[in-house]
Image (cartoon, rainbow, N blue to C red):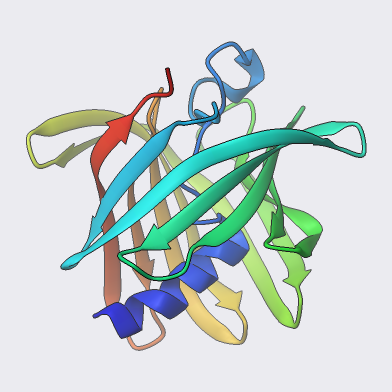
Amino acid sequence: MLRAIRPILGAAAIIFGGALLAQPKDTPQAEGYFPLKKGTKWTYKVGDNVVEVEVKKSEKVGGEEQFQVDTSVGKEAKTTEWYAIRADGVYRTKVKDDKLDPAVKVLPLPIKKDATWEVNSKVGAQTIKGTMKILADKEKVKIKDMDYETVMVEGKDMDIAGAKTTVRLWFAKDKGIVKAEFVLQTNEVVKLELTQYTEAK
């Protein structure tokens, strides 16, 4: 299972950085769906494995504030991504030292059902192309004993480094991503579900 998770997280990193983050509550344009305060942590279950995500710091890049988010799978080496909040949405700008050209929009702002946006970007030698859409803005999901009202985003049959992958993400207010699904070209489905959210102090 871990072997299957690695390429999925790599693909997710191209689009959403393990996309598993959020913006500080005092940033109104983020609408609370991306807590990005330093020290915020998420723990996800993926099969029998654990994925941990943490906002490490923020810094100015070309006059724009960007946020570093680290993701690790068990004892595997971490992946680092950078994000920026812009007037029209949340963008992923960099993977480790490689810039996304252009930056990839993770979520449009303001949140609006049926909103769509095109993705056509490169990071290193990898490409990502496709159309993303907000399918629902008040979708109810249950994860174990927790009920969430979420914004559900789908990228159907995205072309990720030459492989077709469907990506589905569920964003809960003041929590960020609580659930994600990746449907591979082989029809295998990899699911991530939030098990713990730790708000930064």
